[in-house]
Image (cartoon, rainbow, N blue to C red; front, side, top):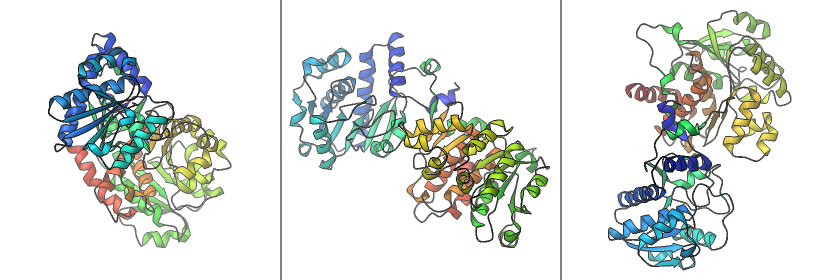
Length: 500
């Protein structure tokens, strides 16, 4: 694992337990890790909420509760009034958590006595990322009271009730303003609804060496530039446009041309050296009236497509936006894959294989190029109905889809997951609700193709495009429409190229 991948790694709860165990086995006592975690949370509370004078801590029966005892001791020593409410009996605590309770040195109240109205802030240390059952009883009541109180909640590791593996809510979950986790984030910090329940998330260094990841070898990552930055290079000074590839986008008919043009513009903006729109005859004049730097060619049927494919410089294609659903889309996709081209299969092209997924997946696996599927939830279900309806997190489902299809799968949404057939997957954290607008997916498809044309590996190209797409939207805000996105790409890319 490279140093940059190391920074982006996400750990399942089991992998995080392994990181703790490896660290303890190497000679750092568990109570030291707990102390460092408590210090990190206490520091974050004092920094983010400087006006707080009183806090209630909710402590669970495990190490998360032990962290809460450390936080309470440190905050109490700094002059903040502390009330700690424990789920269960203090005498039942074991190991490092028991050591932390002995050092606390203050009265401990039962969780049943928790009253958020008497404090400025609530610190949630009931359950961490490893929770695997639904919360009920006294713990559920305490979380519901905390959520209803209007007091800010700071979560230790992960809001109680959020699965660290899937981001799902297990019965009920705390809604945090701030979450402090340790060493590396978990998938539940980025997958919805966990992502929305975490508020701001801070990752604290508590003394675990990054070298433990060489043993754990995680395969899930946060989609951040550190994951793909090495593959994403600025153009060489001595280069020319043909070095940066030639992307092609297929247009729909005369009344469905806009999606393809937005996709083509995005491919050009993200750095493809040349971009051409392949248009049916009926749409040539419409497209010609709107295109300038993007070139235009007629492509009416399979025969014309095969003729165009004789030009091997045409190396990356987008098919689907506004194209139309049916036999023509299927024939074109299969021809592109048979020719060994890189293909982004989006929108109508995905839906065209609803009843013929076998031929698509077989063509992907036998192609000399790479394929990227970019479904939203409905399109995902058309290709992978059993996976969509089955158990597992969005991360699990995207991985299963990539393995089955042989393609890189971009499972879109507010928590977009990019998965590769080899098991690698990345969860995206950029974006804004304003991206939920017609055509934004067409722009994303063009961005992926533009990077594929520049010879980025498919997983890196998809991850980079998804991240850039979200960051570009963040820079615009309310009123965003898809046509705005291509012009926002250069500013985000400039920041990447300026950062070592």
